[in-house]
Amino acid sequence: MNNFLLRRITIDDVSALSAIAKKTFFDAFSGTCTPADMSHFLDLYYTENTLAKEIADTEMQYYFAEVNGQIAGYILYKENNLNFAETKSKKTIELKRLYVLGNYHGKKIAQKMMAHFLDYAAKNNFEMAFLGVWEYNCRARYFYSKFGFLPTKYRHNFPIGNTPQTDLYLIKDLLVM
Ligand SMILES: CC(C)(COP(=O)(O)OP(=O)(O)OC[C@H]1O[C@@H](n2cnc3c(N)ncnc32)[C@H](O)[C@@H]1OP(=O)(O)O)[C@@H](O)C(=O)NCCC(=O)NCCS
Image (cartoon, rainbow, N blue to C red; front, side):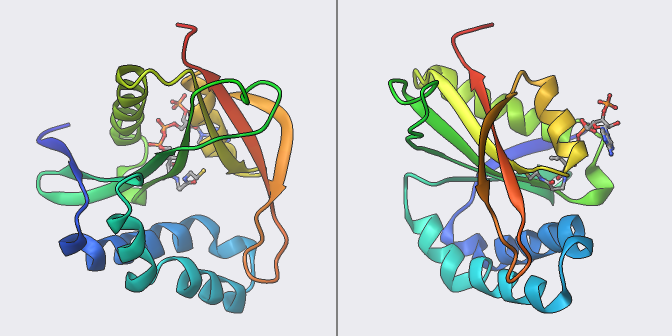
């Protein structure tokens, strides 16, 4: 892929982040809930005000993936604790969001973003990575499995508005090659 760049998102990018966050979430999940639920969710989590607060939080690591100067996706990760038997005594990092625009799926953009995340985790001595993924998001689950994320018995509610949904927790032991 030509001219691939990952760059830290700044407050100047908040409008672009809001646009891609809304579009990628809508594209991924609009068929799984009512239009009203989707609209409510996008307004709750992806407005510029909300995202500006997250960008200002230096613990939130937000990056754009750009291809030939065009935004192709974004990633968000953060050090976080998870009180599960497998993780609670470990230094853990959460992959909170990984979203790529549809025309860049299957083009190794997401791989490069994941490689960046894993590189950051290794350089900063994290021992375990975790993430939540919708139980029926088969493409994402297969993608994560390719990087060694394993399913756990743990799950949590992730409703979109009034539509109940369940996310599965996946974990990756970063000390195992
Ligand atoms: C999840 C995401 C980042 C992965 O990036 P990607 O470029 O699509 O990933 P890849 O194409 O490398 O890998 C996906 C794999 O799933 C396979 N796949 C596609 N549809 C599938 C399905 N319904 N069930 C199982 N596997 C599927 C693909 O063929 C591919 O396998 P391959 O590498 O053997 O060809 C991207 O699809 C995305 O942004 N999706 C929408 C947002 C999202 O769901 N984010 C994750 C939230 S937790």
